[in-house]
Image (tube, rainbow, N blue to C red):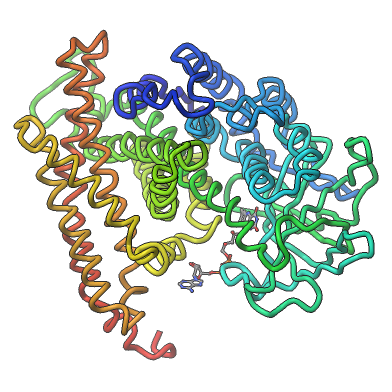
Length: 598
Ligand SMILES: Cc1cc2nc3c(=O)[nH]c(=O)nc-3n(C[C@H](O)[C@H](O)[C@H](O)COP(=O)(O)OP(=O)(O)OC[C@H]3O[C@@H](n4cnc5c(N)ncnc54)[C@H](O)[C@@H]3O)c2cc1C
């Protein structure tokens, strides 16, 4: 059975030495996040994930969810007790506003805890995770009454949340959406339609489920301009705020699927269900994007989370499995063969995953910190800068961390040889579970189009220019330090490729949009590599500073950081040259064949 250990030392290095969280104590909630509080949260969350959730991961996979005759859904054995512990520990609301019962702590802590949850049991983690997304949408767009009614229950975890966008004929293209909303005399709406693939749509973990549903009000314009968002509770709240009568909605069936079996993926039927408008009429997509942006960042982190747990198990196996002898001579003289970790190709695989994971964690944390700044900073300029960063980096994090996260689970599985294909070791489950992260919350091709088509040029390219300036500023500040050359020179080259690709789009894609579409996935990955490379430069600098200051017991970890960063620069970053070449080749050879030639 696979195991999991929360990467607490790495997280503390990032929080304290790379991002200096203590410098933000002027922001609401940060002063309460003292080193002791953070240590207690990480330790408790880590213990819960290692001891309770990780052992349930296989149970969830083999048992799955069951739909009963009355359309209720039973989650796998142990999920209910584990969810009760989430409620008891107040984990859903650690960063939620205190006025509604949250702890108000920085968002960055929620993201860290969510990484641990997702590594140990992705299918389970989606229940609280979707609730956090729905909470964010209610905070941003709900009326005061809606906030008072729903937020305390959801933040406590007594009620959970879902997002309902997808319909059978309508996935990426939400303009095709057909679910109807008919206005009633009392201001409520009757919602009628079928949604598919709704995660956590029905379950037995909480007393109520609050569905956020996209629908078209009768008479609203066609396309995306006529879509509104509704709060549609499974149990209609009574005047005193408790869960009352059953609403006219039900789980019609559960999807049979490749992975995340412990999460109920539901067909949801709304048969004139009572709902209430959330935000403004016909501005539903705008409101839903609040939830989707949070969710996209969270899904990117899921890619990292599965890469991390798969890596940990691959390392354990590589140290134990004895096959062959090292090319440089026998290493384990007392054994019939050397452990496979002596072989360079095994090292290549492990270092590829390790160097990605550590930089990806830094990138998620950097961006979560920007989310805190965007919501909590008193300074308009800082809020705008942070918001720009979030807009630009969200599709990169979602697309790159899940594409590479999945690839890493396959590489980690490969470390087990044929044993990786056998269910007993749990590696094939990581591969199956990771696959969905590339598809939901907008398939990765759509993330790439969002980046190239919408985010690059927004506000005259302000966010992109700020990103370039940040990386160049760091390089200029530390460029004279010889010990940083191994990191800054490759980073400078990769940044040059990113700038050249941006320029190429400006010159070649405005008149011929197929050129933008053809290069979008390469561009997203090129951007991702530069962002991860920048994270490595910052981590290398922080590790050097820490070593200079005596390292305080963490010299091994800091030295490992320096080597791992060098590996990333030497072995991963050069890919940006190939990506640029592919982008500059344009769309011609891709688009020339007629559809019937395929
Ligand atoms: C397990 C699971 C859980 C899910 N959970 C939820 C949930 O909780 N709530 C919810 O609302 N939905 C959920 N979904 C739905 C998911 O978000 C959609 O499947 C996803 O958005 C893609 O839509 P689609 O499947 O209709 O694919 P399509 O939109 O049909 O796309 C098919 C392919 O075409 C590509 N494509 C489409 N349009 C373009 C374009 N313009 N340019 C380039 N490429 C394009 C896509 O990238 C994709 O590769 C879930 C799905 C699954 C499988």
